[in-house]
Length: 335
Image (tube, rainbow, N blue to C red; front, side, top):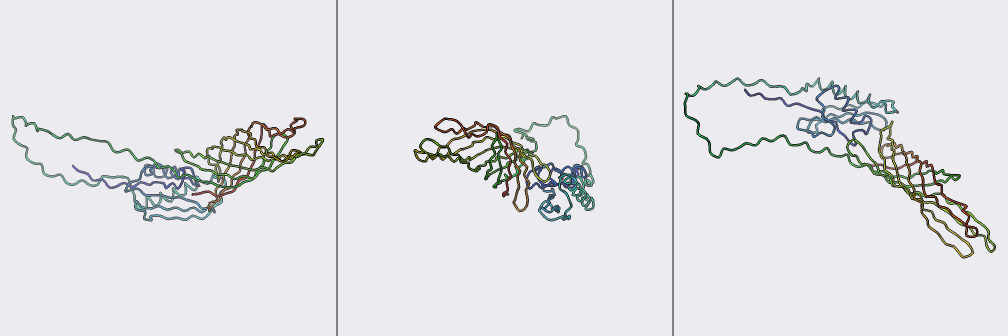
């Protein structure tokens, strides 16, 4: 007896970036919809088929939420636009995901999508009369073909989210020992997704305000102008927090110092370097269209640099061994 199967429909959540990005995030929508329609929602990143519906849930900068449910060919099935609501702490993101799940569940039952069911089987054909009994053994078929049974092909790999690029400029300050310096900086950052996690690599370079000292000798009054150029390369892990993301990480530093000296023998510039390491944390918030704001803080240690005068070899200026950094960065992100 043969039985036909009515095609089963399933829903795939559209991920414009990572599974934990956005408010609500694809993972929050997946969890909420899976609770209302168990067995009907594909896991995030799962390969879609000819009977898969696609659901996209996004919010704009003002907080308005848009929902689009499309058929396997991209045709529109359901569209909703919900006005902005007050939410500023990320706690409303699960509530937005629950609202989207309720709307899709109602549409699902009203239209009548169901799980696979058996269609009525055709009536059985009349049985043929049994052949007469015989004592002869059936002849063996020479070179009988052997049918090889294989399992279903493995699912395709889950595609990685595209990298995210950041470029910005900032201002900050460093406190160490008894000194405090201000700086202006530029930074370049790239983020990649590895599984459910997103990691970032950030390269920055800054210039500090200069300081000038002078001292007197028997024949002249000498002076020196000192300036620092801190450079840093760091890596961090993103953690969703409120409307933005927390970025704890570590980095390596190189503090390049120039000393422009003028004395009785003339003018000259001396170049030195002071390496170090640090632990830092940032908090970045993305705005539309393509703007971001990042708060930065960190603590580190470096090999101190000492500047001494020729007459008495006494250091009167040095970089700190331990330091604290604070900064603010503003720039563009894409895509």
